Length: 418
Image 1 (tube, one colour):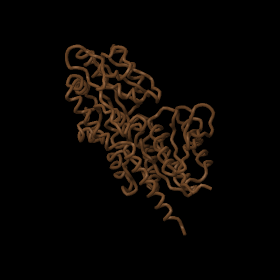
Image 2: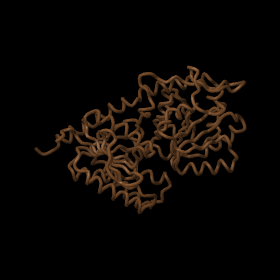
Image 3: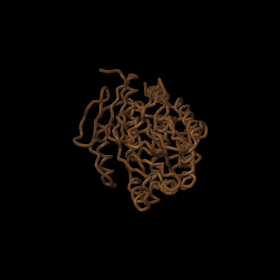
């Protein structure tokens, strides 16, 4: 019988299904296996549910279902049943999708006398009003109270940012039972031994040359090579406003038609953006479906500037992981979101982009135009992104995760009756 500690990790998404949390989970699972743990993933999947392996990682999938409250409850029931059938593990780690998944993590961990770690990407139920989900105030208050009760029982709550840690400790958690571990760029995207060379931005005036990297190679297969690309890569959900983007696109279409805003991903915001694009005749907005993982690095480096958005009301409840994709590509980032967030703090510290007030399309257009027209500003932000990336390579996050898991195992073992 194996003496390696067992870890069960539960999340809706896991490769090959699209989703940033699934990609992060896969990176972490591979690290944990290399570190000597037995890792089992419980996720949803298309087609027939069942068990499989991806290398040394055991994977159990249940049927995903669809949107709607009753389907959500059915999915939670399927996950609970599968978690119990998975048998005893030393640690149960839950992520944030589906919402309130940590409730199941607590129940199953107690059933098997295991430790529970909640890896908080989105803080529910607090996010429900921010996402315009119709939860009655009384029910929301009850869910919040019960949710904090459950999280207080967790061995550790891992947050993505200091602002999220401050929020949850201000609303009922002991800071000593929390840890801040930032997300990281795709481990397969980042070559930690040799930073990628940047591509030259387009010349501020004159002809529009094909974009090439410093070694003279075409960076991506744009048929014309004439567009300065602002890239938004990832989902556009209800926490990611699009009004300022549309306003900026309208301004740039007239002032600098050589700039295109490219959106790659999915989510309800894509439909809204497509409608506004059609209504305004905004041909400088380009919408694309999610791309294969194999094309991720090429996609991320095809953007001259990366765009990240977040509603003010979501401060402390989530942190867009696409920001770390921008750092991984060593590109300037324009963040439309609250100045108090950790993304804004990192941008200010490393001078790797600009922070724009939510809803201010004029300021957004000016920030984009700066990097299009000023090569020195672009390169300065590129160098800032490289400096920020060095402190946020996957190995840095993995080391923090290893420390958390070792401490949780030690404390859990010490608390067992002798």
